[in-house]
Amino acid sequence: MQLDVAVEKKQGSFQFAAQCNLTGQRIGLFGPSGSGKSTLMHLLAGLLKPDSGHIHLDGLVLFDSRAGINLPPEKRRVGVVFQHAHLFPHMNVRRNLLYGWQRTPAEERHIRPEAIIEVLHLQHLLDRGVNLLSGGERQRVALARTVLTCPRLLLMDEPLTGLDEELKYQIMPYLTAVFSKFAIPLLFISHSLLEMRLMTEQVLVVEQGEIKRQMATEELAQSAWAAPRQGYVNLLRLGRPQPQGDLWQYQWGDVRLVLTERAESEENIFELDAREILLFKRHPEATSARNLLPCTVRRLFTVGNRVRVEVQCGSQQLIVQIVPESMRELELAEGKEVVAVIKASAFRRLL
Amino acid sequence: MSFLQPSDLEAIFLSFQVACTATLLSTPLGIGVAYLLVHTRIPGKSIIEGIVNLPLVLPPVVVGYLLLVLFGRRGWIGAWLLQYDIQVIFTLTGAIIASAVVGFPLLVRSIRLGMESVDPAYRRAARTLGASGWDAFFTVTLPLSGRAVFAGMTLMFARSLGEFGATIILAGNIPGVTQTIPLAIYEYTSSPGGDRKALSLCLVSILLSFVVLLASGAASKTLDRK
Image (cartoon, rainbow over all chains, first blue to last red; front, side, top):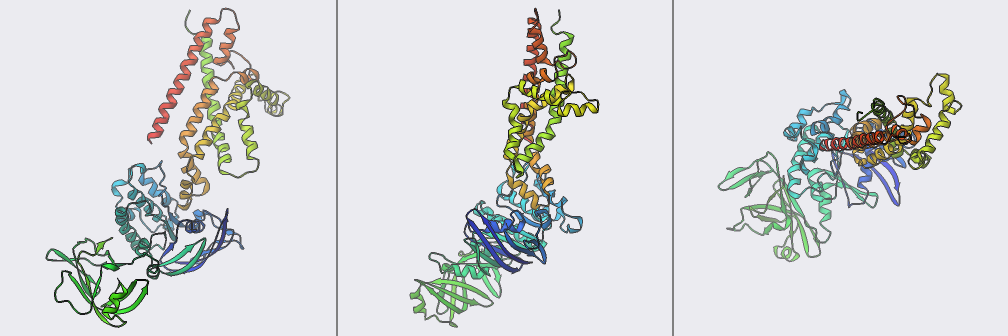
């Protein structure tokens, strides 16, 4: 997707101005509430009219104040999944799903309803009234309804906010499954850094009605570390496990990890807090921890009484958080060989 | 002597005919006016609203008289209609027009409240799913205000059944042509010895109103369940 935006919009005393030129498939819009994320989303979808400027999507002019072009929402084919789903309460799930599909020109319909119903496991819900759905089911139906319009771009406005933690991580695999299967460009709005890291590759940081920065999501996660009391979580994508005694062994790049938790799918995401990793100068003879990874220090970065250590384990990278005193005792420096020690129970499964 | 006279049955039938026709004809117009008031930004909205609501606060006799002026042989509309051989005053059409004008504000008011209470987010969602403005109105906003439309129709129907002042001026009190239940009761009470007959029609009137209330309650429950 190629998105070129330069717009201005004044709403009461709130002044919004955005300028960006993006290329990518999964882009995040990150910022605190009230920063203008939703305004930008409404401007892109055509639900709000900019005061001036232009919006081009993949070479198509959606809005241009000089040329007097303002495509109505139904002509833009920009899909929106709203925070509160907004399923039509007077229709059952099936009719909600087909609402957009029936209004999509036949030559644009390249996603079959049966396919999305299967991916999102909606089969048993089809004849139900939407008021009888749980929060997670509502979001799945809303997602399917929008995906069926085969949009050029899919906007998701904090679709996971308001769902409890557990449910969030139940829904995310569905989201990733949909995007990898149907290859729809995504603009994901959220104020949760973790959601951003799981869903997007690059982010626009929106603050006070402006796009302040544009960067890779991982870069944002690492820069957030400098703020006081912000930790860092390593996200590890692990394949299908093999049993090893009463534990489970996973392949992580060219490294083998031993975990207490079992995962079922082909790809699983685990989080590992940077503070849960111990560094040793030499290989300890015996330890209760199950993972001892020889690695090389890449970079060191100190903020206050915390040191962030980037280490390379084979082909993979880990971020470790230690205190300055340990750094001195270990004589850490870039290029030094160390052993990272991680308990099998330190990993927490997200997806 | 039987409970009801043959002419009473005629009055009951006429009342129904007038109330049904007035309500059914007004509903599309009422939806249109409510749409204008809720969803558009036309200038002079409050004036339109005032004109629509005026019959609600004016004495029905005044409304009837104004209609008589408009639809009379020399009135603006009356003279024009006469060219096509259509006469309004002292006909069933007149009774229907009187009922429609007096009941219209109740209809619009109810539909409007209903439309205003529909979350605009549904409309926006429909638009992003590919529905044009009209499409979204007919498939989302209108069905979601269905209960309010129905409630408005019930109110208007009940109001039409009881309409007296405007009708007697515009359509007169002609048995078998424009004499509805209230007009028949009026005639009985103003003629000697008509008390008993008036009372029986009053009972019919009470019964009818009660049936309308029950029916509307039952229907709105069914709509709720959907």
